[in-house]
Each structure stands twice: as structure tokens, then as C-alpha cells.
Length: 241
Image (cartoon, rainbow, N blue to C red; front, top):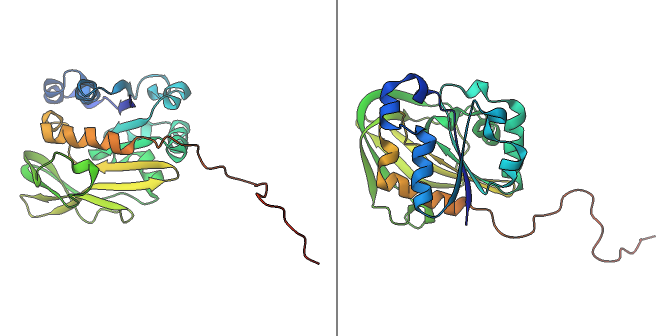
């Protein structure tokens, strides 16, 4: 069984009654709920817990970490970020959702500003599948239409994705690379754009399916990790005169 930790800063839910009405158990609780229904072993963690809920023990037991943040990126401890980064390099999967494009962990793994255009205007988003062969798109129609979402627009300052899985079109005319995968070290990363806190995006069954598929895709490979550093030769080395 894949072990998933859903991390959420959990600040909007405390201060915004609209968000609390949509996600009474928090965004982390909503995501954890549909993952549990699909037979994942799920924990949640939030910003205000000790070590942000991401203790060494929790990280060591996590196969895939899901990250949602927005208001409080700067409050995430740099030491915790370094530990998460190392776990990704060691093989843990990471799914970065919506405004977590500006999270410390995503920016350090990308090495760029991760900046973009944005607009809140209750506009339609049409999320097109651009790689129908990818396992993250399994069971997904040609596009997912969201009646209302926040707009993110290009240019999205990220490295060229290893794979571009989804591209969004917005009612105002912008487009955006909304589903991007990367490999860093031994770990796999999936950035997935939809999920503005004042819309019930994570209640959409197709959006849930994408995240479920993403967890399965990002699961660590069950094998011995490569050994780094000074290496003993496999064969006898003959010293040349």
C-alpha cells in the first residue's frame, strides 16, 4: 500500500469562511479523504504542527508527499525544506498543487523563480490532456472543464518539463502548462495547477482521478538506490608503467 502524506499550510481555512465552507476538514482533509477511499495509507500534516508535521519519522515513512501552500510559504522552515529535498533525491515522490508553485520546496527543486501571471475572475478553465499515453491521464477524458477557477498564465518560469501532461486554456484567453513532470535524483515530481481555495476543485471527480494517478506514478521504485561517492573498482586495475 502506498504511504501518502498530504501537507497543507491550513491558513485559508482558519480565516476565510468561504474556504471553510467548501473544505470543512481543510484542503488536506478533502484530499486525504478521496485518497483513503482509493486504498492509500494516508497521513496529513500542517504548517503549525511541530516540524510542520514533517518529522524525520514521518518523512522516512512517506512514499509520496502532496504539498499545498499559498499564504505562508516564507514560514516554512528551511531545515524542513532541506530534509524534504533530500527525501525526494532519495526517491520519495512529490506532488505540488496549485499555488505551491511558489513553495520553497518546489523552487529549490526547480532552481528558477517559478513565477507566472494570475487573475481571480471566476473564469472557465479547460484543462486539455496533451499526453494521452501518460499514466497520469488514465481514465481522464480529452479535457476537464472547470466552471470557475483562478487563472494562471504563461510565461511560467520553470525548467522545460520532462513531460507535459496537461495544458490549460482560460476564458480570458491565456494558456498555461498545468501538468508537468520532473525527475530529481531518484524521485519523481508532478506539478498540477488546479485547486484555488475558494472553488470546490478538489471535489471534482476527474481532478481527484488525476491526483490518484499522480500518486501511483510518483511512487518510489522498489530497488536498491545507487551508491554515490568514492567507489571500489569492480575489476582488478592493472597499473600501467
